Length: 137
Length: 137
DNA sequence: TCCTACATTGGACTTTGTCTAAGTCAAGAT
DNA sequence: ATCTTGACTTAGACAAAGTCCAATGTAGGA
Image (tube, rainbow over all chains, first blue to last red; front, side):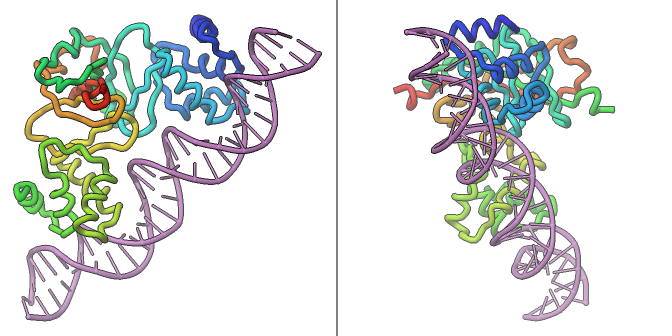
Protein backbone atom coordinates (compact mmCIF):
# COMPACT_ATOMS: atom_id res chain seq x y z
CA UNK A 1 0.00 0.00 0.00
CA UNK A 2 2.75 2.45 -0.73
CA UNK A 3 0.26 4.11 -3.09
CA UNK A 4 -1.84 5.06 -0.13
CA UNK A 5 1.12 6.40 1.82
CA UNK A 6 2.18 8.41 -1.22
CA UNK A 7 -1.28 9.83 -1.63
CA UNK A 8 -1.32 10.76 2.03
CA UNK A 9 2.02 12.49 1.77
CA UNK A 10 0.81 14.44 -1.25
CA UNK A 11 -1.98 15.75 0.90
CA UNK A 12 0.59 17.18 3.29
CA UNK A 13 0.15 14.47 5.87
CA UNK A 14 2.86 13.94 8.38
CA UNK A 15 3.88 10.36 7.96
CA UNK A 16 4.17 8.83 11.41
CA UNK A 17 4.85 5.26 12.42
CA UNK A 18 1.30 4.99 13.77
CA UNK A 19 -0.35 6.10 10.54
CA UNK A 20 1.86 3.80 8.53
CA UNK A 21 0.86 0.84 10.66
CA UNK A 22 -2.85 1.61 10.47
CA UNK A 23 -2.60 1.92 6.69
CA UNK A 24 -0.78 -1.41 6.52
CA UNK A 25 -3.38 -3.16 8.63
CA UNK A 26 -6.08 -1.96 6.25
CA UNK A 27 -4.27 -3.39 3.28
CA UNK A 28 -6.07 -6.18 1.44
CA UNK A 29 -9.14 -6.91 -0.62
CA UNK A 30 -11.57 -8.37 1.86
CA UNK A 31 -10.72 -6.41 4.98
CA UNK A 32 -13.66 -5.14 7.03
CA UNK A 33 -12.22 -4.63 10.49
CA UNK A 34 -13.78 -2.76 13.37
CA UNK A 35 -11.76 0.04 14.93
CA UNK A 36 -10.85 -2.25 17.80
CA UNK A 37 -9.71 -4.98 15.45
CA UNK A 38 -7.56 -2.46 13.62
CA UNK A 39 -6.15 -1.41 16.96
CA UNK A 40 -5.43 -5.02 17.92
CA UNK A 41 -3.60 -5.74 14.66
CA UNK A 42 -1.74 -2.44 14.85
CA UNK A 43 -0.67 -3.15 18.43
CA UNK A 44 0.99 -6.35 17.27
CA UNK A 45 3.42 -4.25 15.27
CA UNK A 46 3.55 -1.12 17.39
CA UNK A 47 2.57 -1.98 20.96
CA UNK A 48 2.26 1.56 22.29
CA UNK A 49 -0.24 2.78 19.71
CA UNK A 50 -3.21 4.42 21.41
CA UNK A 51 -6.82 3.65 20.70
CA UNK A 52 -7.49 7.35 20.15
CA UNK A 53 -4.84 7.45 17.43
CA UNK A 54 -6.46 4.58 15.58
CA UNK A 55 -9.81 6.36 15.76
CA UNK A 56 -8.24 9.62 14.58
CA UNK A 57 -6.45 7.99 11.68
CA UNK A 58 -9.48 6.02 10.57
CA UNK A 59 -11.64 9.15 10.67
CA UNK A 60 -9.14 10.97 8.54
CA UNK A 61 -8.87 8.15 6.03
CA UNK A 62 -12.66 8.21 5.78
CA UNK A 63 -12.71 11.99 5.43
CA UNK A 64 -10.34 11.95 2.45
CA UNK A 65 -12.18 9.06 0.84
CA UNK A 66 -9.51 6.38 1.09
CA UNK A 67 -11.63 4.18 3.31
CA UNK A 68 -15.38 3.66 3.65
CA UNK A 69 -17.19 3.45 6.95
CA UNK A 70 -19.73 0.63 7.06
CA UNK A 71 -22.25 0.32 9.87
CA UNK A 72 -24.36 -2.69 9.15
CA UNK A 73 -25.73 -3.68 12.50
CA UNK A 74 -25.65 -0.76 14.90
CA UNK A 75 -22.69 -2.28 16.64
CA UNK A 76 -19.10 -1.29 15.89
CA UNK A 77 -18.50 0.43 12.57
CA UNK A 78 -16.29 -1.44 10.13
CA UNK A 79 -13.71 0.08 7.81
CA UNK A 80 -13.51 -0.95 4.19
CA UNK A 81 -10.39 0.03 2.24
CA UNK A 82 -11.67 -1.30 -1.08
CA UNK A 83 -12.75 2.04 -2.54
CA UNK A 84 -11.33 1.45 -6.04
CA UNK A 85 -14.21 -0.66 -7.29
CA UNK A 86 -17.70 0.41 -6.33
CA UNK A 87 -19.38 -2.41 -4.50
CA UNK A 88 -22.07 -3.29 -2.00
CA UNK A 89 -22.14 -5.56 1.05
CA UNK A 90 -23.52 -8.94 1.95
CA UNK A 91 -23.78 -9.41 5.72
CA UNK A 92 -24.38 -12.53 7.75
CA UNK A 93 -27.20 -11.82 10.21
CA UNK A 94 -25.75 -14.31 12.63
CA UNK A 95 -21.99 -13.78 12.79
CA UNK A 96 -21.75 -10.35 11.21
CA UNK A 97 -19.08 -11.09 8.61
CA UNK A 98 -19.17 -9.00 5.48
CA UNK A 99 -18.47 -9.86 1.84
CA UNK A 100 -18.12 -7.40 -0.98
CA UNK A 101 -20.61 -8.00 -3.77
CA UNK A 102 -21.27 -6.38 -7.12
CA UNK A 103 -24.96 -6.11 -8.00
CA UNK A 104 -26.03 -5.13 -11.51
CA UNK A 105 -27.33 -1.70 -12.33
CA UNK A 106 -27.26 1.54 -10.42
CA UNK A 107 -29.51 1.62 -7.35
CA UNK A 108 -29.70 5.41 -7.57
CA UNK A 109 -31.59 5.27 -10.85
CA UNK A 110 -34.36 3.24 -9.19
CA UNK A 111 -35.46 6.25 -7.14
CA UNK A 112 -37.94 8.40 -9.10
CA UNK A 113 -37.66 12.16 -9.03
CA UNK A 114 -40.89 12.57 -7.05
CA UNK A 115 -39.46 10.37 -4.29
CA UNK A 116 -36.44 12.58 -3.65
CA UNK A 117 -38.13 15.29 -1.60
CA UNK A 118 -35.67 17.98 -2.58
CA UNK A 119 -32.65 16.07 -1.31
CA UNK A 120 -29.37 16.33 -3.17
CA UNK A 121 -28.62 12.64 -3.21
CA UNK A 122 -24.98 11.65 -3.34
CA UNK A 123 -25.05 7.90 -3.09
CA UNK A 124 -27.04 4.75 -2.53
CA UNK A 125 -25.79 1.77 -0.59
CA UNK A 126 -27.35 -1.67 -0.71
CA UNK A 127 -27.00 -4.14 2.14
CA UNK A 128 -27.94 -7.74 1.54
CA UNK A 129 -28.63 -9.76 4.66
CA UNK A 130 -28.73 -13.50 5.09
CA UNK A 131 -27.09 -16.48 6.68
CA UNK A 132 -23.60 -17.44 5.55
CA UNK A 133 -22.71 -21.06 4.72
CA UNK A 134 -20.72 -21.34 7.91
CA UNK A 135 -23.58 -20.30 10.18
CA UNK A 136 -26.16 -22.29 8.23
CA UNK A 137 -24.57 -25.65 8.97
CA UNK B 1 -52.96 1.92 16.89
CA UNK B 2 -55.52 -0.28 18.55
CA UNK B 3 -54.74 -2.78 15.75
CA UNK B 4 -51.28 -3.15 17.12
CA UNK B 5 -52.49 -3.57 20.67
CA UNK B 6 -55.00 -6.17 19.50
CA UNK B 7 -52.33 -8.07 17.62
CA UNK B 8 -50.11 -8.00 20.68
CA UNK B 9 -52.87 -9.35 22.87
CA UNK B 10 -53.52 -12.14 20.39
CA UNK B 11 -49.93 -13.17 20.81
CA UNK B 12 -50.54 -13.63 24.52
CA UNK B 13 -48.87 -10.42 25.51
CA UNK B 14 -49.66 -8.88 28.83
CA UNK B 15 -50.95 -5.47 28.05
CA UNK B 16 -49.33 -3.04 30.44
CA UNK B 17 -49.53 0.72 30.62
CA UNK B 18 -45.87 0.91 29.59
CA UNK B 19 -46.33 -1.16 26.46
CA UNK B 20 -49.41 0.77 25.53
CA UNK B 21 -47.53 4.05 25.77
CA UNK B 22 -44.59 2.83 23.74
CA UNK B 23 -46.95 1.56 21.03
CA UNK B 24 -48.74 4.92 21.01
CA UNK B 25 -45.49 6.84 20.68
CA UNK B 26 -44.59 4.77 17.65
CA UNK B 27 -47.87 5.58 15.99
CA UNK B 28 -47.64 7.55 12.76
CA UNK B 29 -46.39 7.35 9.23
CA UNK B 30 -43.07 9.10 9.34
CA UNK B 31 -41.83 8.16 12.78
CA UNK B 32 -38.17 7.15 13.06
CA UNK B 33 -37.31 7.74 16.69
CA UNK B 34 -34.27 6.52 18.55
CA UNK B 35 -34.85 4.48 21.70
CA UNK B 36 -34.08 7.52 23.80
CA UNK B 37 -36.53 9.65 21.86
CA UNK B 38 -39.19 7.01 22.36
CA UNK B 39 -38.33 7.05 26.04
CA UNK B 40 -38.61 10.84 26.18
CA UNK B 41 -42.01 10.87 24.50
CA UNK B 42 -43.21 7.99 26.62
CA UNK B 43 -42.05 9.72 29.81
CA UNK B 44 -44.25 12.66 28.95
CA UNK B 45 -47.28 10.42 29.36
CA UNK B 46 -45.98 7.98 31.94
CA UNK B 47 -43.19 9.62 33.93
CA UNK B 48 -41.96 6.54 35.76
CA UNK B 49 -41.32 4.42 32.68
CA UNK B 50 -37.82 2.96 32.78
CA UNK B 51 -35.32 3.10 29.99
CA UNK B 52 -34.90 -0.67 30.18
CA UNK B 53 -38.62 -1.16 29.61
CA UNK B 54 -38.52 0.92 26.46
CA UNK B 55 -35.56 -1.11 25.19
CA UNK B 56 -37.32 -4.37 26.06
CA UNK B 57 -40.55 -3.38 24.40
CA UNK B 58 -38.83 -2.13 21.27
CA UNK B 59 -36.84 -5.36 20.99
CA UNK B 60 -40.00 -7.37 21.28
CA UNK B 61 -41.82 -5.30 18.70
CA UNK B 62 -38.87 -5.86 16.38
CA UNK B 63 -38.80 -9.59 17.14
CA UNK B 64 -42.42 -10.06 16.19
CA UNK B 65 -42.05 -7.94 13.09
CA UNK B 66 -44.24 -5.00 14.05
CA UNK B 67 -41.36 -2.55 13.93
CA UNK B 68 -38.16 -2.38 11.90
CA UNK B 69 -34.79 -1.49 13.37
CA UNK B 70 -32.84 0.96 11.22
CA UNK B 71 -29.19 1.74 11.84
CA UNK B 72 -28.08 4.25 9.28
CA UNK B 73 -25.14 5.94 10.86
CA UNK B 74 -23.58 3.76 13.53
CA UNK B 75 -25.11 5.98 16.15
CA UNK B 76 -28.39 5.19 17.87
CA UNK B 77 -30.70 2.76 16.10
CA UNK B 78 -34.02 4.13 14.97
CA UNK B 79 -37.34 2.34 15.07
CA UNK B 80 -39.66 2.39 12.10
CA UNK B 81 -43.27 1.30 12.66
CA UNK B 82 -44.21 1.51 8.99
CA UNK B 83 -43.94 -2.18 8.18
CA UNK B 84 -47.10 -2.41 6.11
CA UNK B 85 -45.61 -1.06 2.91
CA UNK B 86 -42.15 -2.21 1.99
CA UNK B 87 -39.93 0.82 1.63
CA UNK B 88 -36.37 2.08 1.79
CA UNK B 89 -34.76 5.07 3.48
CA UNK B 90 -33.39 8.43 2.46
CA UNK B 91 -31.05 9.87 5.08
CA UNK B 92 -29.67 13.38 5.45
CA UNK B 93 -25.91 13.12 5.90
CA UNK B 94 -25.92 16.30 7.91
CA UNK B 95 -28.82 16.19 10.35
CA UNK B 96 -29.64 12.47 10.23
CA UNK B 97 -33.35 12.71 9.55
CA UNK B 98 -34.92 9.87 7.64
CA UNK B 99 -37.62 9.77 5.01
CA UNK B 100 -39.35 6.67 3.71
CA UNK B 101 -38.98 6.25 -0.04
CA UNK B 102 -40.21 3.72 -2.56
CA UNK B 103 -37.69 2.87 -5.27
CA UNK B 104 -38.75 0.87 -8.30
CA UNK B 105 -37.87 -2.77 -8.75
CA UNK B 106 -36.54 -5.33 -6.34
CA UNK B 107 -32.94 -4.77 -5.25
CA UNK B 108 -32.57 -8.47 -4.47
CA UNK B 109 -32.92 -9.41 -8.12
CA UNK B 110 -29.89 -7.26 -8.97
CA UNK B 111 -27.55 -9.68 -7.22
CA UNK B 112 -26.44 -12.48 -9.57
CA UNK B 113 -26.28 -16.05 -8.31
CA UNK B 114 -22.49 -16.16 -8.53
CA UNK B 115 -22.26 -13.18 -6.19
CA UNK B 116 -24.16 -14.86 -3.36
CA UNK B 117 -21.36 -17.01 -2.00
CA UNK B 118 -23.65 -19.67 -0.61
CA UNK B 119 -25.55 -17.23 1.58
CA UNK B 120 -29.28 -17.70 2.11
CA UNK B 121 -30.27 -14.11 1.49
CA UNK B 122 -33.40 -12.90 3.22
CA UNK B 123 -33.54 -9.24 2.32
CA UNK B 124 -31.90 -6.23 0.76
CA UNK B 125 -32.07 -2.73 2.16
CA UNK B 126 -31.18 0.38 0.22
CA UNK B 127 -30.06 3.56 1.92
CA UNK B 128 -29.94 6.76 -0.08
CA UNK B 129 -27.78 9.48 1.38
CA UNK B 130 -27.73 13.16 0.62
CA UNK B 131 -28.42 16.62 1.96
CA UNK B 132 -31.98 17.56 2.82
CA UNK B 133 -33.48 20.88 1.67
CA UNK B 134 -33.31 22.22 5.20
CA UNK B 135 -29.58 21.58 5.62
CA UNK B 136 -28.76 22.70 2.07
CA UNK B 137 -29.90 26.29 2.64
C1' DT C 1 20.54 20.71 14.40
C1' DC C 2 16.65 23.23 16.06
C1' DC C 3 11.81 24.71 16.01
C1' DT C 4 7.28 24.42 15.80
C1' DA C 5 3.07 22.96 14.36
C1' DC C 6 0.95 18.89 14.23
C1' DA C 7 0.41 14.06 16.00
C1' DT C 8 0.11 10.92 19.89
C1' DT C 9 -0.93 9.47 24.47
C1' DG C 10 -3.71 7.96 28.39
C1' DG C 11 -7.35 8.60 30.92
C1' DA C 12 -11.68 10.60 31.88
C1' DC C 13 -16.01 11.12 29.90
C1' DT C 14 -20.29 10.32 26.90
C1' DT C 15 -23.57 7.69 24.46
C1' DT C 16 -26.00 3.68 23.58
C1' DG C 17 -27.39 -0.47 25.07
C1' DT C 18 -27.57 -4.80 28.31
C1' DC C 19 -28.17 -7.27 32.63
C1' DT C 20 -29.92 -8.45 37.19
C1' DA C 21 -32.27 -8.81 41.55
C1' DA C 22 -36.14 -7.25 43.75
C1' DG C 23 -40.64 -5.48 43.57
C1' DT C 24 -45.20 -5.05 40.99
C1' DC C 25 -49.20 -6.25 38.51
C1' DA C 26 -52.37 -8.26 34.53
C1' DA C 27 -55.28 -11.71 33.83
C1' DG C 28 -56.98 -16.27 34.59
C1' DA C 29 -58.71 -19.28 38.46
C1' DT C 30 -61.55 -19.75 42.36
C1' DA D 1 -64.37 -9.88 44.15
C1' DT D 2 -60.12 -11.64 45.55
C1' DC D 3 -56.20 -14.56 45.04
C1' DT D 4 -52.20 -16.31 42.77
C1' DT D 5 -48.52 -16.55 39.83
C1' DG D 6 -45.46 -15.90 36.39
C1' DA D 7 -44.46 -12.36 33.42
C1' DC D 8 -43.36 -7.35 33.48
C1' DT D 9 -41.04 -3.27 35.35
C1' DT D 10 -37.65 -0.83 37.88
C1' DA D 11 -33.21 1.32 39.25
C1' DG D 12 -28.86 1.13 38.96
C1' DA D 13 -24.65 -1.19 37.83
C1' DC D 14 -22.23 -2.63 33.96
C1' DA D 15 -20.34 -2.93 29.12
C1' DA D 16 -19.07 -1.56 24.46
C1' DA D 17 -17.93 1.93 21.23
C1' DG D 18 -16.43 6.25 20.59
C1' DT D 19 -14.95 11.28 21.82
C1' DC D 20 -12.29 14.81 24.11
C1' DC D 21 -8.49 17.08 26.31
C1' DA D 22 -4.14 18.60 28.37
C1' DA D 23 0.40 17.11 28.38
C1' DT D 24 4.08 15.10 25.77
C1' DG D 25 6.53 13.66 21.63
C1' DT D 26 8.21 14.13 16.88
C1' DA D 27 8.29 14.83 11.46
C1' DG D 28 9.97 17.65 8.43
C1' DG D 29 11.13 22.34 7.01
C1' DA D 30 14.45 26.36 8.03
